[in-house]
Length: 147
Image (cartoon, rainbow, N blue to C red; front, side, top):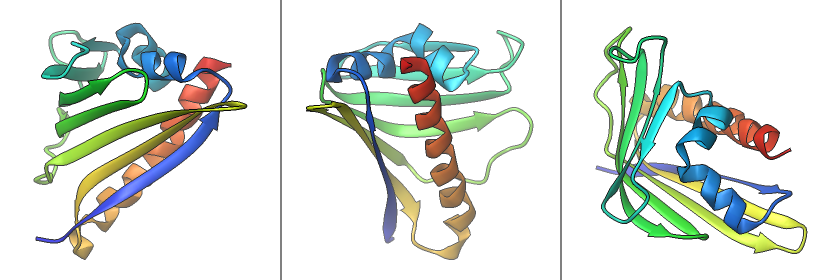
């Protein structure tokens, strides 16, 4: 099966270390992503989980991933990234791989994401379009958190 990827990158007025740290610190994730709770075991073979919803025992929406690469402050690779929604069962999802790459620049740090695993067919166009919008919104949340 052919797959496609989404890549998005922005510069932020901060250090690579601070930018990397906010990607795995649960309290930061809750602020920049608006999650209700997050659990992260920040290491290779760790986990990355965020949930939304009013009820601790029954979240509305949850994202779950395995951390396969953890190289502060430059790279984190999440594999087997999946989404669970209480409101409506989501269509079968591809096995997403999400890579965060951070590089220091003279005027701050650059964050680049690459999300692989979108099927090449038109059946995934809506999912891909939603992720494009979602990452723009997510980066806006990160920018607001940093400032």
